[in-house]
Length: 286
Image 1 (cartoon, one colour):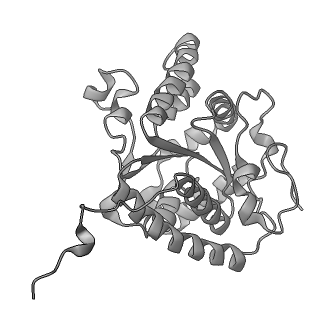
Image 2: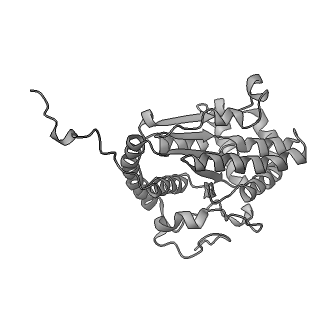
Image 3: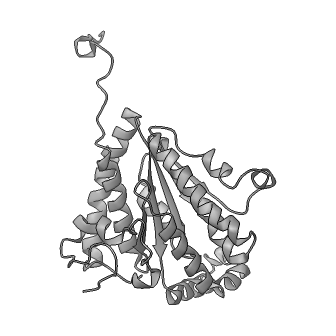
C-alpha cells in the first residue's frame, strides 16, 4: 500500500471517502515536499473501480451543478496547474466535459497579451472569475506568475515573494464574496512526461501538440518542481487549499478530480430556491 507524507495515510480500501484528506496540502506547513507524493499512487483501486466511482460522481455532479445554477448563491473557481503533458486538457474533457455547458466556462492562460501585460498580473484572471451560479475552470492561471516567471527569472525574487501574499489576498477576497476555490496540481513524474512527449512525437494525430520549446522547459524540471512546491506550500490556505493529484494514471486522476469537485459542491449545501410566491396554486391554462 502506497503511503504519502502528508494528509491521511490510512489504508485506502474505501479510498473515495478519504480523497480530500489524502491529497490536500496542509496549510501553513513548511514540511510539504512534492517528492513525497507518488505520481503513480492509485489509492488501492484498480481501473474498473476508479471508473465506476467516476461514473457515480458525474451523475451526482449533474444534480449538484443544477442546484448551483438554480440557487445562484455561490460560484466555483477550479484552478488546474501541471507540467507540460500533465493532463490539464484531458482532465477538463473527461471530468468537466459532461457538465452543462450553460453553467460552465473554461479559460486558458498563455503568454500575456500587450493589454494584459500593461495591468497587474491578477487583472486578466480576475476579469473572468465566475459569477454566482457558474463554474469556471482555469487551464493554467495566476500561478504561472510564480511558476514559469520565477523559473525564467523574468521578475526579481522580491516581486515573487510579494506575489505569494497578493495571491492569497486575492483568493481570500473571492472566498469572502461567495466564490469557492478548488485548486488542483496534476502531478506526473519526469519519466511519465518523457513517455508522453515520445507518444506525441510518434503519433501523427498528436504531433500538432508537440512544441520544440517543450524540450527546453523539460531541462528545467527541477527548477519547476521547486517553484511549484514553494507555491503550493505558500498558497495553500484555509479558504483556498491546494490538492496534489497523482496523475501518472489518467483514470485515477479523473476519479480524484471528480471526487474533489463533488465534495466541494456538496459542502455548499445547495438548495433549490422556492420559486415565486404562490406558485404551487398557479393553474396552467389548457
